[in-house]
Length: 420
Image 1 (cartoon, rainbow, N blue to C red):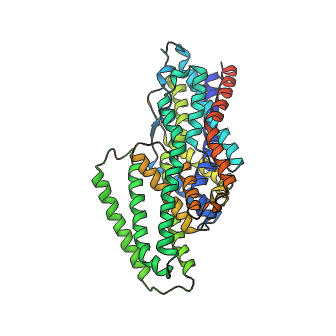
Image 2: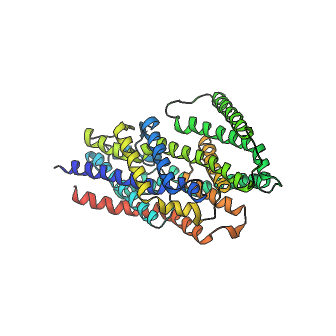
């Protein structure tokens, strides 16, 4: 068996390993608020996330993904006619992609074992930068992109916290602190459902269908979202008004309504993650296959359907087997969550990701969601936050790039030694 074939097999196994770790960490933190608030049981969260994650990957998954995540590397430095690497360039890139997958997967596994939600994007970026520095040099790294990714460490959680805190304060003052909270929910509930529908439709068109519908006119997108939001408003109002009776336990009624809203949002997050991120997770595997087959790497690598499906399965298995650790952190170790608080956090994170993506700002979904949970806690006062846990999470974010980079360097040298 040739060295390139061995590298191919290691790359495919590494991609499966990476997908498993993404499920255990990335998807788990998205479902954590729903489990922590009691809107979903752990088993129900795993089943729903599995269904919608797999559906997103297999039905509308991105079939063409950037070869190098976020364009972090200048791939011309690894071309066969490169003045530095020469004919060895493609083989070096193949080994680097494999080492990056392994390094990012190892870091995600370590973070998951500690119950720490970290960014998959930052893990991959750190690993790619580490391997590129040791194999070619700093000129092969697009440092402007690295700077944008690093800036998202601060930008993502702050924006998520602000939007989530604002939503929770609105719910708190507009519903929970009213003399008749059930009646306030009866009046405001349809409006909130309409707002959620508007947000989810916009996000679905821009984030999920963005690779299918290219540059749609903004007014048409807003118009479609507004119509569907209006229908959601009317349907919700009709359901609430049908046989309305003042509940004996008004606060329980309020939380039950928001719990259902939270479940809808959580299912959307899982579907969108499957549609957008599964291809990115297995993109390096597609690059490895391309280099092995053709001896070169084009700017865009087609991702076969079977790889998308395999990636979706790996992510679902990761969530089902080990996702409970990160779910426990996001769902209760940062601050105590109820359905109203959990809904506010998910709404804040989804809004932040949508707005930032339309503005061209690189943000991390993980950081947005954790920041949103912190923001909901801060809205109730500093004492409501587990500052020790927040400190551990922030420290894990800070070391993600250097740790993943160092792991990639070590793994790259080992692979290059044995597969030379």
